[in-house]
Image (cartoon, rainbow, N blue to C red):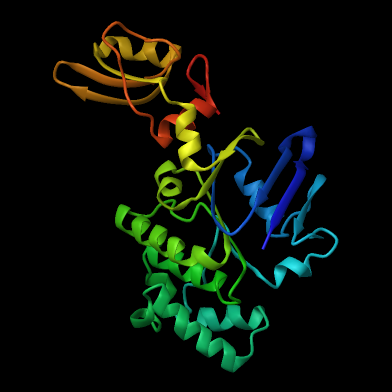
Length: 293
């Protein structure tokens, strides 16, 4: 299994580019695509899922151009879009039967596969409940089940944990980890902890361009020696946010503990600390003046 993205670009009306000169080679495992809202993640996901066609560049699945031959990928693709919706009056079983028919699965194959997937996503006991009464996390689990109906080799999930409570997010991440051993999974999100928990490789995207791509450990090493913490007066915080990339600020009775990225010590009281992925992410997207795009 190999997905190759080569100089991919998407232009919208008014000359606006949602994505430009994006290149990446992806193999089995979980790739975390990380970036702010509006960075171009969903634009990329739609092109990879053959929902949208690129303005420039190409995507190759096992050497085949998916723009010219989309069926080469569609038959082995599972896709959970950001705006995934359900039919509220159908129950989980009925909805998955409908989706299985739309994907061309035979009735006997569909029944066996749906039973297996309902167990996998922990919805077997809720199979007859109307989807309109499901929680956000349960609907997302139905979404991942429909994406897995054809046992895909490429699974694309776009902002799958947005709006979920912490417990549901952890369960969803665990499920992705279980699924990652025999397929390529692309997890697109702006939530750093989701990527940190499951991804073997991480791609950081900003303003439609690829900024960084590497294993988590290699990305962390880029910020080594550049992360500082100290206790600062609360009144200094606005100015610090303008001058530095501030990755966290914890208010205390005697001030605020700030964590900033800087090549040099930002304050005489600052001490060097080990970087985390939040620091690396902020380092990639921060601009002077505190603008984060």
